[in-house]
Image 1 (cartoon, one colour):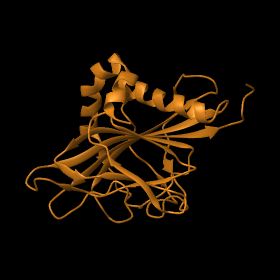
Image 2 (cartoon, rainbow, N blue to C red):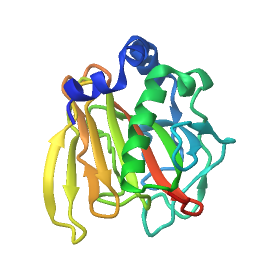
Image 3 (cartoon, rainbow, N blue to C red):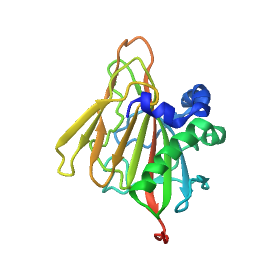
Length: 225
């Protein structure tokens, strides 16, 4: 979904908040859990919840991130403790509007279900002779119901193409998120996804790709409609 469609959806308050929202990616912390030994990823993490039939996003106590090896063969199988998303960023209009947009789609796909939401701020850095790997685990599912990926900022990077695969692993689509607000929406039951490595356009300057990833998973019992 291009930014020309998502930005009006997010609203004027999110647009006004966007510069501060994007600048918060400059304060992400190094991900030291990379199974490939890489030091190219920075991140922050948060969890939220929404009860069935409600648009109210409720911040949950900070907790580690866990994926089984079934879904992440590189970094799964352990509890990974990441720095929290800053309170002001999580509560800010840009973040709230983005997460609410994803929640509305999740609720349309899974009516009557409460949602468990995990929020990831990612920065992937690239250097001369060292590619940045947005998805070092390769094409994958996240083990959730629905995934939102939104471009925040690209600086001096080439590639970083999002690829969508069917459940048999055949590529069915590809596109590159380039503009702030460009968004990919993935039904995690029906498709795998991955992103090609990024490299610097000018090897003498810093290069990075900043994205917001939010995953939505049905939680608790189905409510009465």
